[in-house]
Length: 90
Image 1 (cartoon, rainbow, N blue to C red):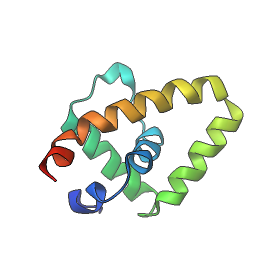
Image 2: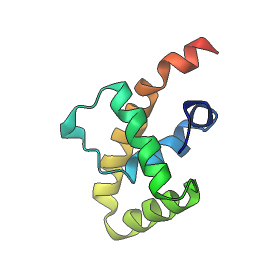
Image 3: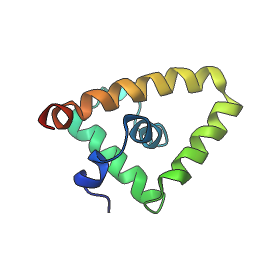
Image 4: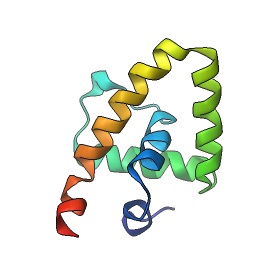
């Protein structure tokens, strides 16, 4: 299972791709804790390999570009908020 330490060493873009690949939805209005948990679970589901999540994201971008853009903007904003406390602590 991924740890918060390993998650905080990833870029916002990496984390957003992993969140994008998770089942979490904007309508869930997730808390920062729920976002971090969803990222951890999604990364674990990909065997700890973030490139597997990135491959899914790339496929979605090609298959559904309009939906991809909306979801990725949400993922980037959501990740920034969820990990803001770690960024300000550094």
